[in-house]
Amino acid sequence: MTMTEDVAQSTAWSDRPWPGAQFEPRSPNRTWSLNVLLIDDDAADTHLILNVLRRHPQVSTAHATDAPEFALRQLAMGRLKPDLVLLDIHMPRVDGFTFLHEMRQIPTLEPVPVVFLTTSRLESDVIRAKDATASSYVVKPESYLELQARLNGVVRQAAAGRWGH
Picture 1 (cartoon, rainbow, N blue to C red):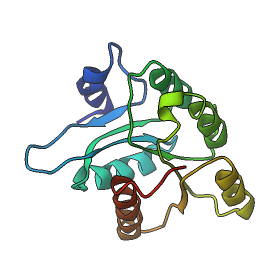
Picture 2: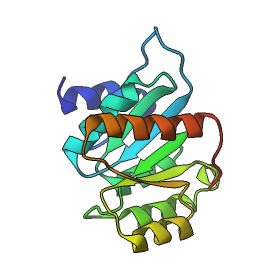
Picture 3: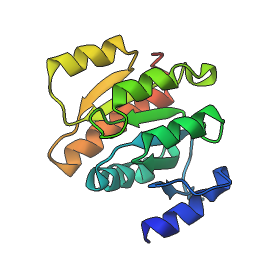
Picture 4: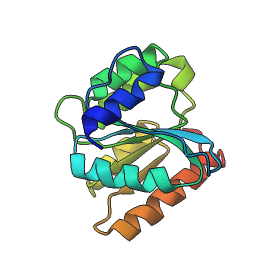
C-alpha cells in the first residue's frame, strides 16, 4: 500500500488529507485501547515504528506525519485525539520541543502523555525533555527487536495510565 493510499484511508477523522500521514485501521481480531500519534521526519523510522504499533494489542490506531505544524493545527481543531504522542526531537521545520510546548497550550491535550522517541543521546536533550513536561525519553535503538521491546513498554505504560506529564 502506498502512502497516498494510506492518506486516502485516513480521511475518516478529517475532511482533508493529512500531508505525510499514514493510518493503520483497526483489525476485528484484536482488543484496542490507544490512539497513537507519531511525529517523525524520518520515513524509514516511521515505517518501522508503525509496524510495531499496528501489531500491539493495546493500539487501536496509529497516525504518523512528518509535518508537525499541520499536526498542531489538527490537534487544535480537535480532528486528532491521541491517547499517546511519540515525538522526534530533531525535525527541520518545527522541532519536538517547540511542538510539545505548543501542544501543551491546548487544554484538552494537557494530560496526554508525550514520549520523545529520538536518536539523540545528549544529556542536554534529556534534561530539556523533562523540563518540557515529556512523559518519557526513549532513544531509538539500532535493532528492530529492541525497538519493539521499547515501544511495547511505552504503550503498556500509557495504556495503564501510569503517566501524567
